[in-house]
Length: 175
Image 1 (cartoon, one colour):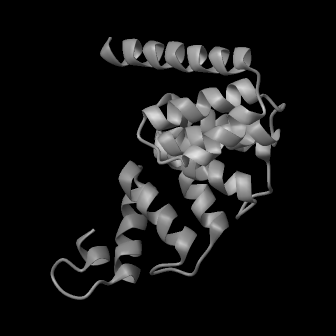
Image 2 (image 1 turned 90 degrees about the vertical axis):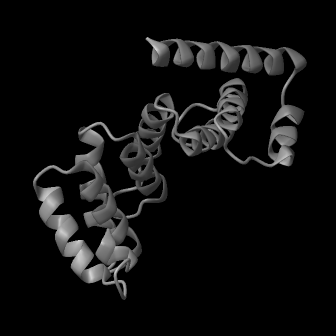
């Protein structure tokens, strides 16, 4: 990280990538995440979304919610892996269970548009409400546009589901 950020001089992302690789190959989770990100953006290494996906996959298997989210983004966009919206949705859902607000926003969009999942406005609003509760920045216009497509009963159901799921997650976290 010192090399990547240039804490003691000029940043040297290529050297950082090499040290991250050595640690990542030994199973160091944070090194796997950093190396994946470097491959994703092409910093210090040649941009290689497939390599990024492989390192995110290893980190996801080790339990990283951040890796699950980022791998979901790659599947959502078809970067380095074949586009697979259903797999992206599963990865987003796993990451959202661990509190990743961006994963919840992504799920809201997938359910609202029926991409990779059956269209479900109630679930879309539920995920949007949960994302905002976790600190995600969502435009009020996004919520308004979604609610405009729903009945009052659907909105009430979505809000109740969001409240219930958040309460369940909080209870699990405190156990």
